[in-house]
Image (cartoon, rainbow, N blue to C red):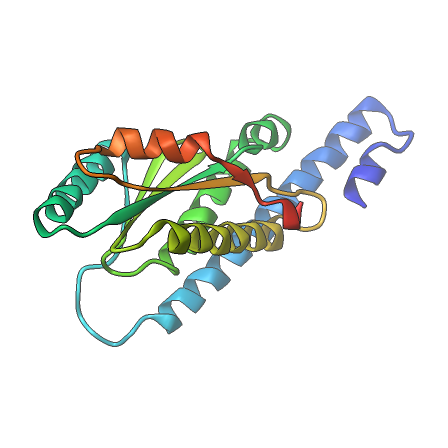
Length: 200
């Protein structure tokens, strides 16, 4: 509805003012949804002490994944990596501003953090790319988990943004083979990216 009104026969000044109002409404909606998501996450947390899961930057993610892969090699276990790409964040930033994209990134991080095990690792690899290591997880289970998480991200962003904006999400999964490093795994996962077609 907001886009339809924005295209109505208004003066340039009126159109710009209306677009600014729409952007502010979307950001306000996102902030409300953020608070609701964080409250839900707090309520879901078990009542025990332990280190909180965090979103690692790329260097820290690579280092921790390398450590986990060394453990896999030593004990002959396997791990898989998930790769997520929120493809239209740059276009949304150009149209609606950086504040909305920053809120979207927080929404993605909060959503992923509510679905990770304590043994999993989560990292932000680029402005619109995220990675997750799943220890002791085979390829079939990783793909299933990736689809579930991509759907959760889609639902969270759609709920935050409202009906006028739709996220475009792709995800990939790869199970490490012996002697492979994190860069190889992420590259392989990126090569098999699948669009979340059922929601778009």
